[in-house]
Image (cartoon, rainbow, N blue to C red; front, side, top):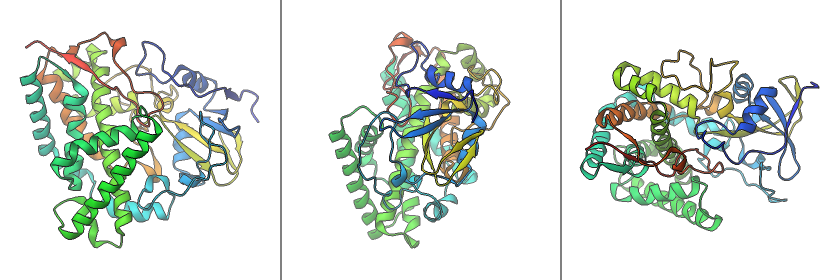
Amino acid sequence: MSESLHTLEAMPTARQAGCPFDPPKELVQAREHGPISRFTFADGHEGWVVTGYELVRSVLADQRFSSRKELMLHHPTIDFGDIEVPPAPPGEFLLMDDPQHSRYRKPLVGKFTVRRMRQLTERVEQVTAEHLDAMEQAGPSADLVTAFAKPIPAVIICELLGVPYADRDSFQENIDKFLGGEVGDEELIAAYVETQQYLAELVAAKRANPTDDVLSDLLDSDLTDEELKGIALILLSAGFDTTANMLALGTFALLRNPEQLAALRADPELADGAVEELLRYLSVAKQFMRVALEDVELGGQSIKAGATLILSYATANRDPERFTDPHALDLRRQEGGHLAFSHGIHQCLGQQLARVELRVALPALVNRFPSLRLAVPADEVALRPESADIYGVKSLPVTWDA
């Protein structure tokens, strides 16, 4: 075993003051010691934190490391004792391995191709323009989260899945509660249960009266209503929360990097590169866990069967061995291959949808409001806690010249 092996004493729970876009400094320091560190979980389990790009990518591509929910027995900061973890509910394929994972994912792949998602561009442009118009009429100030970042992906993903317009606000509120890391356990569970009940009713409604949407398209498959409900939950929550936080946090990052913001305004051709760089730089899906199914050699270390690994996407995407000057936001960066959408069999199914939404909405926003700026000091912008599954801002007060 390497004598230089680093031990991460505790998982950081806060970002450094004044650095809202950078990973917690303790994780960055751990990566500086090497791409993998020992870590003792809250219940005493001896596991690992993987912080280097190549090792994170290799684990994600290696099916000797499992995503199964029932194996996720250890939490970095909470000791759950001897509680038994059940398998993932039917359809919730993010917490499954093959072949169960592929059974649920395969019918969806053709519905989220690059071509199909690009066909949505005109609708995304329309929805974006509607919300920019409303901002302008109500302005010259707004909370960008509620006026822009949340409603655009909520409208698009709800339309894709056939969620009635009248139900979108309550759906959005409940998703916020069980993914935002800010409500108590009782309220979180209530929001999750309410969402499950709603989706069960939605699937039943589609059975009775199919419409032109992804959920109705799946009715001809061998998937049960319970499985369809689980798939809908994954698509709705992932399709809304990640993009909403990228829109808000991405705008915040651009406002804090005025040269990059000016470059995006000046060059429409920069939009694609800007989206990829913001995805890398921000890594709003900060980390995920895997469990070794057998003894594995990783980065020169012996990983024992049953060991839990925390994969830090945020530090992998800032690894100087993979990206030049990784802590700088550079919209003209030529190095691709970030892990913001993960890698391997669990690579984000909706990544092309997210790209379309970001590619349309961010340039439209900054060009509609050339004088857009923060309405509060940067250090007063309220950030989501590190306990949230997806990193972002709670609100982003902005203003502009009328």
